[in-house]
Amino acid sequence: MSLRRLGFLSAALLTAATLTACSAEPVEADDPKPSATGTTAPSGAPGGAPDKGGLSLAEAIRKIPIAEEQRTGYERDSFKHWVDEDDDGCPTRQEVLLAEAVTAPEQGARCALSGGSWTSYYDEAEVTDAKKLDIDHMVPLAEAWDSGARDWTPERREAYANDLGSERSLVAVTAKTNRSKADKDPAAWMPPAQSATCTYLVDWTATKLRWELNADETEQAALLELAEPCANSIVEYEPAS
Image (cartoon, rainbow, N blue to C red; front, side, top):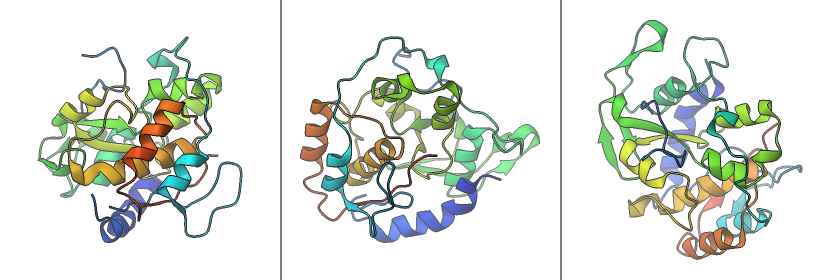
């Protein structure tokens, strides 16, 4: 069983206590081809010791390195995803669905899931059919490539695409919102639910810092502007190994 699944309940309770604003489909919309307060995992700066108490959202945004984005050479297959990392019969997609279920689904042979219920925080939708959910990479694979993952090894890209070490790197959301997001950054797309704004900005920023990904100037400016109502939001993250 993954660390994500074991730690999700306590993390969810913490998030619920601190938030004031706030797939089962075979194809994800973070591939461009198909057509408050919030916390994440333990805090820290890339390559450095954790920052005690985390960072304000604005401070965390400013810690993301600024660089030009480059899409050249991107292929979705460069990120091997939905693997069964712990050999328990459940690939990453099912691990996320199991971890984020409000009502636990029944688990059948080869980790087939039936029943259960979920809340898609992007649009506050209640979902009782896992087939109507996508598993969204918080920072889409194409955006990750643009922001530095193009220089990673295949092994690191696989680790990124299946990151169960942070509860907010992968999220179960309605297919409609995930397809609307596609590979856009917050300068071009934000969740439709107003309650999701600060949580989404925290999750996005923490993921970029966790994986030492860059942001371009347009993205940083948008993040800072969008974060203005989120003065009490705290970003905590643990750099990926």
